[in-house]
Length: 326
Image (tube, rainbow, N blue to C red):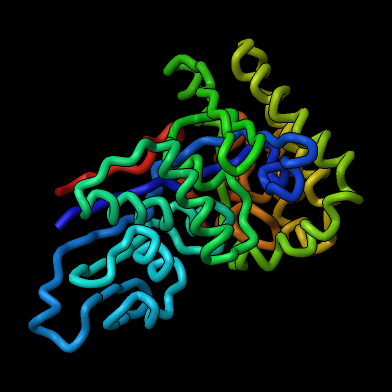
């Protein structure tokens, strides 16, 4: 048996510019970090000649099939076919966090699964190539309306500024921060679960139809990536980062009325009133986790304000996809 894992991520700036529908025309970029919450896949040999099925997979349900084509789960099916595995394998998936919450868990699963399948075959794949494979599987084989940042963060990990040129030409720049600066930054994060789950592709579909109408706003959101980088690397006061997050959220929610709603707006206002400099809804919108950026001394006020909500503690700069047991 082997076990792989890949991290989910927090995206600070540039979300929405990582879709080919935008970046193939204007260039895209995001500033994001992998966090210490993972999607795990176990892979082990399966003696199919002793059973009346050839592949066993488990996630929220169990599937026993003779060929990948019979499989209901699209990502399991397409990844198995992509890697040329037709039988004699058993796969299980578990995760630290639920899906559809804005942290890129679907792509973390795809990356972790591809990592496990390649390792099962005795193959080594470079992290960047693993990300490219995950993008291809999700966008072209599964045909989900997904962006291209989640796969990069899951495969490579770290705290990065990622530039998108084409689906096969993506540049990853590590954010050069000292351990002290990283720790200081991390202490300002406060993450709250809205209690609302949604499928990102459903939220994104309307946004992609409005890319031309929203080009100016998306260009502004792309510029904020560089501004966020400058604040972090030039040792500027972190209050500027929080204020920029607020500007980014106001820009993002203007892209489509479905990105936010009355409850999300209420929760965001609650966080600002409790002392947060700024924040944003993580992921495509309409639900998931809310990120606030606030000085550590006001975190007790935020805890009190969100006493009835789940608060998520995280470590940033997490490692990318890897085999943790074999």
